[in-house]
Length: 109
Image (tube, rainbow, N blue to C red; front, side, top):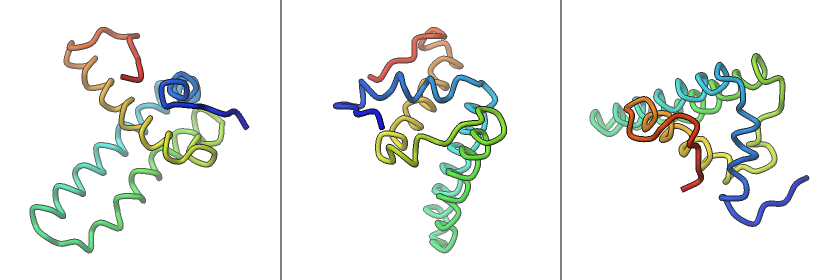
């Protein structure tokens, strides 16, 4: 197993494991649904729905790996860095979509 001393070292590896845009799309769908479920639970104070957070978050992400990347999710080897990587990739997606950051400027900032 590769060793990473920091998230900055890990993030290029994480992006390489998500080179298929369809896989990234499944991650973005899952991350968006996580935010929707969290907002719904907070607004309605119906905490019972929080069990959906890992289901939709990991479910959509893993689906993308198995269907499109044909690799094992980095979560299995690097759980903390992978969780952070998913949210950094999601943030970068929105920054690029909104034109705040140019495409191809994926960085672990």
